[in-house]
Each structure stands twice: as structure tokens, then as C-alpha cells.
Amino acid sequence: MFDVVIAGCGPTGAMLAAELRLHDVRVLVLEKEPEPMSSYVRIVSLHIRSMELLAMRGLLDRFLEHGRRRPVGGVFAAIPTPAPESLASAYLLGIPQPVVVRLLEEHAIELGAQVRRGCAMSGGEQDDEGVTVVLAGGERLRSRHLVGCDGARSTVRKLLGVGFPGEPSRNDTLMGELEAGAPREEIAAAVSRIRQTSKVFIFEPFGDKIYRVVLPCEGVSEDRAEPPTLEDFQQQLRAIAGTDFGVHSPRWLSRFGDATRLAERYRIGRVLLAGDAAHIHPPAGGQGLNLGVQDAVNLGWKLAAQIRGWAPDTLLDTYETERHPVAEDVLNNTRAQVALHSAEPGARAVRRLLTELMDLDEVNRHLIEKITAIGIRYDFGAGPDLLGRRLHDVGLTRGRLYDQLRQGRGLVLDRTGRLTAEGWSDRVDLITDPAAALDVPAVLLRPDGHVAWIGERQQDLDDHLARWFGEPAAA
Image (tube, rainbow, N blue to C red; front, side):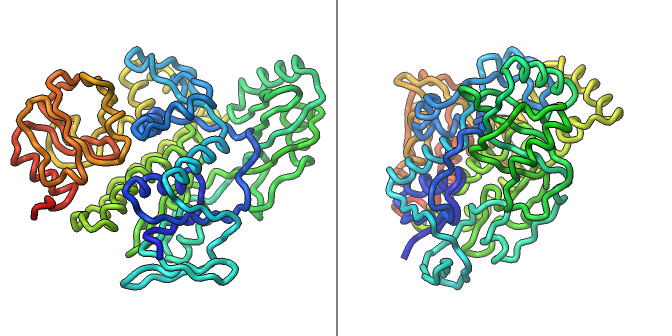
């Protein structure tokens, strides 16, 4: 019997498996695709918050080796505004999505997760003791919990009967990796001209004669699972650019829509949803993969606490209460960005006005923090502004803060030298460092790096340790 079965080994499922394994949870990941995606055309942006989480787990250097740093300015609706001075050193990491999946899957396996590829889930049911998972071939597995990380057409969500309200796709976008016979200079000139009015159009080189192509498509496909054809790309290129640039020999072709939907529930009993199974939206701002990875880090330690038996009664419920509003905000800002991409006069007027407003550093910073998820503040009750926010990677007398979070445990960072986490030492670490670059006496950090308490009184700390990490072991 497994502790957790995860349906789907994309970025969300792989990250969740790794987070659970940090707490010695027995994890099986089911992935219907027999082999990982091999195409490198789908470049995604890892945002500031996602890279912070990777740094907390000692993974960031692996990703930096495979990506290209990009400025954070212009991240909202592709409005070309430089980042404010306070974020001048920040960056996004452009990296192929298959590389992200591979690195996270390798990390989960290194920690002891089992991954079964070519293995689709077809059914399941839960009872008071666990979940029975039925595979496509008829095999039945037992697990204490099931998490659906199986994408927009989630089998798990449908089995739960969870509503997925929102707007259906109104426009398709084609994406592919193709070779082109036209001279590179001719292609570059055409792309520059088209991009003046169409922010969706991309035709950029990836090696000798190989191009990453993204372009709007007429209408919406009736069968979302059916990939487009080379002829579809040629036809749309001729309609937009007046030429198909001699594209041929496609390596990978796909389509995506602009549907916007949010699951009504993230949890029913022993079954939970995360990533695209819980929310889908247009790719404006490149938030989708990041949102799913951040779901996984929020959920992982809470589900592990439930399985290990020390979770406070309502801890697992906070996964939905915290992450559902975050997804709702992402859906709203992507709706706004899509509207700003419109060529209609009204939308173009609003875009010009917003461009002027983004010359104000406060406006620009607010929108960048929204897209990159560093502006999130969970509601932990009344307190200083830092409460509920993520703590950045502060310097310690020895090393950096994030290096102390690699095991996915809680952390008390104490500058006073008077505090203790005795009774919670199996779940929470204590660092006493009077020289820590911290503006408050002490903080309690959750495993996801969010500040759960600020203060200096031992009794207050004990109360918050119990709130987030259960009763002390001595009890």
C-alpha cells in the first residue's frame, strides 16, 4: 500500500512527489505517456518565486545550467517597461519545459519516489481507510491519498465530480518546432513587422534552420487532443505573414486554447487536485507551470504531516484556502492581459494608458510581483506586513537562509538567543544567529518559506508552533 498515489508526472506531480519524499512518504507517480516529451521548443519562464523554492531545496543550480536569464521588465501583457530599480537584479529563467520535467522527475526519483510511465488511471473510489486506484489495464492499487496532477482534462477531477466553471476556449494558438527554407534575414524582417501588431506571433531560431513557431489560429479545434498538421501551420503563416517561410519537417506540433477555468474544490476527503487539474488559463505572463509547482510545495509538507500523524486538524484544509484565491487572482490577471493583447481600438487605448501608468515604479512593481508570485500574502491573521509573506534569502553568519530549508522542515530563525523549539525538533529546526540580516527579533518559517510568526516571546512561539506543526512530541 502506498501513502500517496499521484496521477501525472508533469512539473506539479514530480515536484509534489519530491516534497513528500523529504518526509519519507511512500509515493507512486502514474504517468500515461510512455516517454517524456522530447521537443525543446516549448520554452517556459521560471518566475522569481519558483526559483526561490528551487533554491530552498538545493535545486536551482541544476536549472540555471539549462536556462537563459531574462529581465523581469515587460512581464505583464508584454508591455515593454523596464523593471523598477528595486527589482533590477531580479530575473526570469527561460528554459525548455521538457528540461523542467526531467530535472524534477530525476529529483523525485533520487529521493525515492516510484514513477510508472505508460500507466494511465481509469477509475477509482475512496473509503474511510484510503483510495482504490484502478489502472487502464485493470490493475488495482491501494493508497491512503490520491492527488490529481493530471492536467486540464483531469481524470481525477472528473471522478470526483468537482465542477470546473469558467470560460471555454475562444481562440486556439498553434505551437511547433519546424525547419524553414527562407533566408533568416527575410524571416527576421517579417517577424519584426508582424510583432508590431500581434504580440502572439513568434518565429524564432533554435539552431540551424530550426524555428520555434507560435501563431494565432482561426477558430477552435473540436478535438483538443488532436494535434495540428503541417498544413495548418503553412495556411496560418500565409494568412498572417503572406508567406509560409518554406516550413517543413516538423519535429513537434501542438495547440493550446485560452480557456479559463477554476475547480470549485481542491479536496474531497482523501483526494486532492493540483496544477492544471485545478486551474487552467491562457499563457499570458507564463504563470501556469509556476502556479502548479507552487501548489506542490504548499501541499507537500501538509499532506506529509497528515500522513505522519502530527498535522493539526485543519492544516490540510489550508491548502485550498491558501491556493484557491491565488489561482483565482492568476485567472483574473490573465483575462486582463488577453484583453490588452486585442487589436480593438478600446483595448489598444487601455494598453496605452496602462503603459503610461507603469512608468510609476509602484504600479510596475505591483504588476511584476503579481505575475512572479512574490507579492502573495497568505492570511495568517493580524500582524506586521511580513506575516504571511515569503521571506527572501537573507544572509546568516554562516551561509544563506535558503540553504537551511533543504529538508522541507519548519525553521525558527532567532536573533535574540532566548528561544527554543524543544518538543518540535523532529519537525522544526532552530537557528540562533544574532547577526542574521533580519529586521525583526525572530521568525517562524513554514517549509514553503512563508513567515508564520514574528516576535520574541517563547509562549507566542509555542502557540504558533502548535498551530502549524501540531502538538510537541513530549505531549
